[in-house]
Image 1 (cartoon, rainbow, N blue to C red):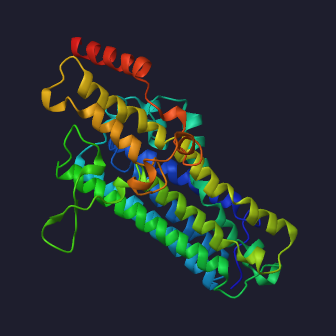
Image 2: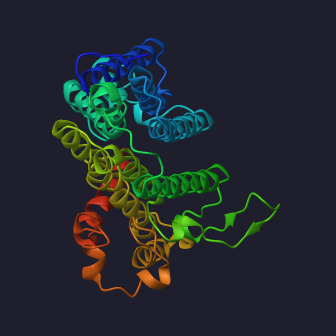
Image 3: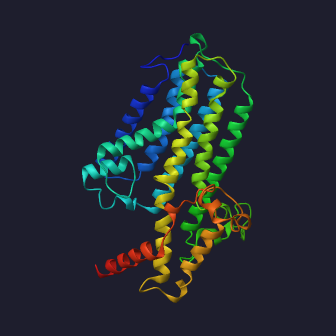
Length: 366
């Protein structure tokens, strides 16, 4: 059977329309039932739906296409399942408590979870753009323009150096992201994180013996290991999908499309480092420890909370996993540039700290 030719040769419009429709369906269900527990699940399964659609529509089941599609679907199923399990165990998503009864605000939040209300159009465009852009390497690989041999497509023998490198990078990223999520969930679910201590000082429970060993786990090497793992996954997918261009014969337009799909891992990196990832965690976490230690009603057992957190920052890489003994002595200029711990993430005691204390004081009065 020949591939489905729909709208364009690269399946760009087809996957865009399906992504929009899928997100609107998720919103309709959540709004009708006033049920916000499927928010993250909808986003995760949209990746899976887009990957499966492109593979089946392309109808060219080359080994590379199947492997790349399976890897994306496994990643999507894992993240969607984990986020759904987590929210079901924890109860309703508190991010929606104040807006669930307001249609337009709820609509916007369903499409993109953020800390401040934005216009619905921007919310819709942001999430649809995210899923569609990040899925581009696989979408283009499965399209007739790249994989249909009857219309100038190419299918180099599976097992090129890029195939192997892509699979290895994806596997490492997937393991890092999965293990880090499991560790963090275990800490929170069992309430074994002392309020005055960061995550990385907690013993890591092994699942192969019936006791806890003093192993620090991924959170001792990185402050955001799931983000690092996710970034690795999408770099791996892009590299895996690239062989028809680097090892085959494709028209210039198809080669340009495959090279251009590098926007997928770059967009993921930029989004997690400057958008919905690291910025939403770094200063809020620092603020919590600062107020816990320096606040008006701070307890004696929490007196060292801020000092512990500062020590945690000094020895723990913000993204790239590095052993503390290696990271801590590095010059600040290396940490602030090559290792991505940019000044925008720094909590300033004189400004941010003063504002945090004032906010805590005002909230108690209310």
